[in-house]
Image (tube, rainbow, N blue to C red):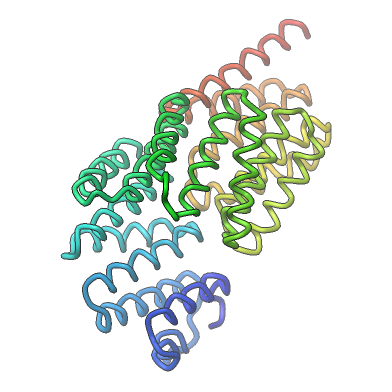
Length: 358
């Protein structure tokens, strides 16, 4: 398969084997008759197109709808959001059951949420919620509440986010969906952390981590390593924070989880600042920025600028520091993130205070 990302290929291979015989899977994945494909992106695109085309020919009704959602999940986990969005646009327009229509709406809402298109994402969640209400599908409704909460949390609307997460957990009473319940536990823990309820946050994090380890959900484990690292940052236990970020970075590197890698890199940089390891802090800032630019993660780009501003301020490079803080503030304001905007503005105030006292 040449340059095709091995991790993504393996995930597509495993997905196809859930639906087709080994010989059929080989027809989709093995080789091309023309000369070698020049780069990874072309090869990746061609494999995915072949897989979807083959599945559309061989599968019918809900089986094909389910396959589309599964391949979207694989792509989203690998941060191939544009291709995932393209598949979902087609899926939403096709005829299938109300359940899979609602699931497709939620998957698209999640993609748009990760691209910071808040309003469009919420509109799709609203539409999915109507369908799940009609179907009396509590798990579907809990997924809606989780995405609502995530949307508000990303924009700094902490209490609104918390209300939605609690509503989602309540909907899952007597449910056997351990994964979704653990996802809600995780997001609720993040909110409790932001609110300063660190003991409650820690309890939720470790409860969720236990579930994801049991289910072998590697991406979620990496996310939780990062989140627990953030908790230790709040507790001012910086060495423990770095250790947790390193755990997340190791899992995310093996799984090619780019978003988690990016946020773990800049969070590690932040912890290293407190340990006065400025050279390594700068290195991890640039690592985070490189990935964030590549996957168009605007929130992380804004966060990295803030951390770089703190670094430059500690080095007494005040003009550069101010420039980075102003960029971070502008990006956060454009994204409608009130909490992050306030944090960037606070850092600017600290900088001006340093200048006054210098």
